[in-house]
Amino acid sequence: MRVLVVGSGGREHALCWKIAQSPLLSALWCAPGNPGIAEVARCVPIGAEDVAGLVAFAREQAVDLVVPGPEAPLTLGLADACRAAGIACCGPSAAAARLEGSKAFAKEVASAAGAPTAAWARFSDAEAARAYLLQKGAPIVVKADGLAAGKGVVVAATLEEALAAVTDIMDRRIHGRAGESVVIEECLLGEEVSFFALCDGTTALPLAAAQDHKRVGEGDRGPNTGGMGAYSPAPAFTPALAEATMERIIRPCLAEMARRGTPFTGILFAGLMLTAEGPKLIEFNVRFGDPECQALMLRLDSDLLPLLHAAATGQLAGQSVAWKPLHAMVVVMAARGYPGPVTPGSEIRGIEAAARHALVFHAGTRRDEAGVLRAAGGRVLHLAATGETLREARDAVYRAVDALDWPEGFCRRDIGWRVLGAAG
Image (cartoon, rainbow, N blue to C red; front, side, top):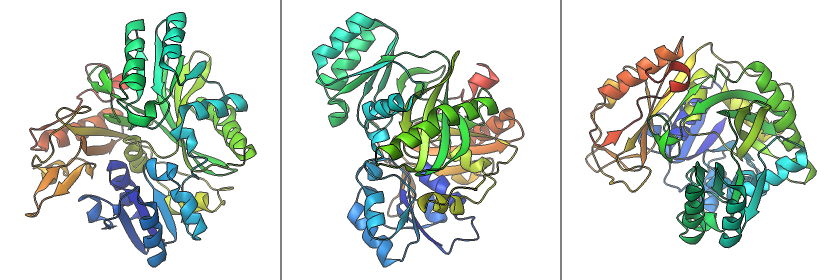
């Protein structure tokens, strides 16, 4: 099978790494890829949002399956263009990708499906949003309605924080057009979990859960990021809770999407809060999480490629998935200043030493003309390891972190604290 993965981050490196292990694979490309991905796939210089260029390449190379990593090309219609060209794509149509592209749309679908979720309201007028906040008080959650690279959510402990979030998102437009409207919702209490299911429009195959760490600082302090680390499995997410999530959230919402004429194909990522009343939906994403994907790929015992192809071609019924009896942890190395502005170009040394302890997935790297590896983004490297216990996986990952020689980078030292305790 000839496969094209779309994207250039740590998630896409993990996907390429796993797909490359399939005996069904005959050729693997990644567009645009990165230096780490280049070790397992052929990188092609086509941007992840260049839908026409990606489809043209897939046609020229007789690609059998396109696997989009990030959400942006899906919201731009990559899956639609692939299918129009007769190419299988493991991702939703642009209409179905609105589950991530608009938080209000996702809430509408959940409400119509009867899926448990936080009480919510949408506002396109900043003054109306502020009046609602004054009425409701805090704690409360303010979200940019559109795509904001995982940074458009403010969990406000005080009314002042909530009002400032509306000002930042709607008046200052710190997330651009994503902030043309906001969703304000009740603040759910409990543990947050990322749960993934593979869908083919009618059938949903449960995958696994992970817990990530969104805040930039240890102890879950500071602003939200795209993710600073993750681990899987999530001990708080029992098999009974997984089945409840499938029955009350995933399958009803999949049926509601089909009823609307926008069947969902690909990876459905449900952000959940495990409340005293059971799992409640926080939001949907339409792709693997990053860095949750890396943890899942390390644990996955099944061949990923035929599963993705079955989802893309409506053949998931009867499929099953197997997992290794291992714990996996991912720690993100970011450039200092992230999630704010960073200075790119610093040299990264010690990759080989780190790789003796953990897998090193590249997220924001490049090689200069002399072949020197340099930082080229906010989240730069994702270090991932497995162990028979989460503590074993944690220890291996941080040995890899310590083996790196990159003074301009930083990471959280408390990934997994929910399970291991604040002291590790």
